[in-house]
Image (cartoon, rainbow, N blue to C red; front, side, top):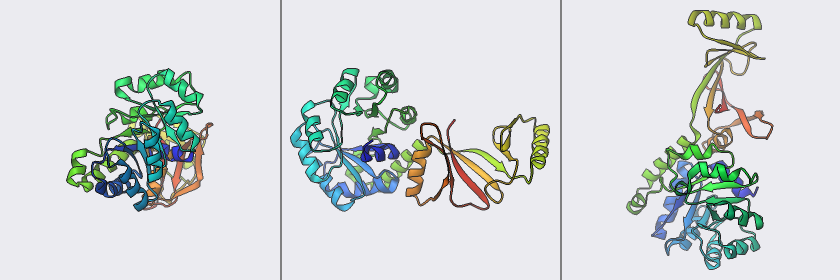
Length: 321
């Protein structure tokens, strides 16, 4: 997968922004980055788009800025010259797609039917924008279309919001989602970039969906663990589930057969995507123990420990069941 598309998949949400005044571009991009989304799709729906892309690219070189609503090869050239790192189109225009491919630029063309997918595949494109997503059948339509096209990945845009975001992202063939709910035009016009930053942070937290999963209690020996498990099960009528290195009592207590990580034990935090959670938490300064990684047979990260204990407890992230 192209490295830019790979990073977009880790970010998870691509803010789709319409900028009327190019002077707003940098403070808006800073709000996105501070809130946790270091990317943006600047749409060519206004005359300010090219300058906005240029301003963001110059001021924030680590920002992954792309151009959206690109309708012509001329607009593609303007976007590329201004510093756009990827191109997004609302529909499938063969001329624009060929033009970007010839320049070696990542392009995500818009489709909403199997014929569009086959056009994309005929040109070597395996990541497409599904637009307008909700109006075209939403995640059910994507799942139906994806079945015959195993290599294709989708970036749905149009009608995505906090209430349906994770329904889309839960489907493995969805690369990321485009959305505009956190970049309200009225807030941009008023210069309420602090408010936008707050909405962005809420969007990231909604996407990651952190929840307490279980508490791990360290025991000195298998005998101690058995005594502890049986006492808790008898006292509270909890079900026991014995595993190789531990016994689960109820849903949220893991009794370790021998001392495990953490002076006092460990706490597991569930998330919708461990891969995305690690990406975003690293941006917040959290360190991870790469030696603790557990991946599934496809290579997807399913569990990882934080490098540092908190008050004697080790913490690990675990994929939502």
